[in-house]
Image (tube, rainbow, N blue to C red; front, side):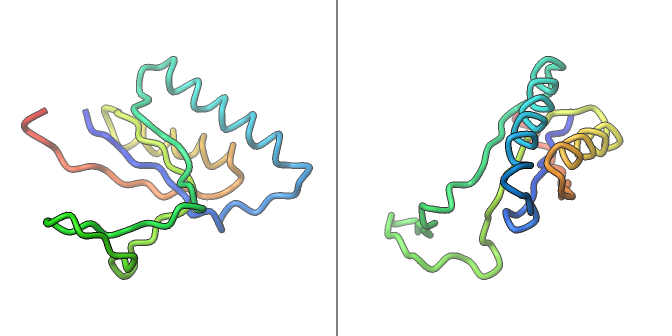
Length: 112
C-alpha cells in the first residue's frame, strides 16, 4: 500500500467565526472515519507560531530555510491501496475543511 499526503496551506481555509466550530467538528469526524477504517497514519496542523530552522549535517541551525519550502496549514497521511481511494479521502477532507486539498504519494520504501 502507498502512503498519501493530503494537505492544504493555511490561507486556503477562509472561514467565518460562525463556520469554524462546524468545520472543526466535520474535519475531526473525517479523521475518526479514517482511523476506524484503519487507513490513518498521522496528521495535524503546522504550528505557525514556531519558526522553522534548517539543520546542517554538523548540527548548526539556520533560520533561512530552502526557498519555496515553507509549510503552513494542515495535513493528513493515509495509507491506501489505490490513488482513487486517496482521491476519495482527499474529497472528504476538502468538503469538511471547505477548501481544496493537495494530494501527493510517498515513494515506495523497500525497507518497510
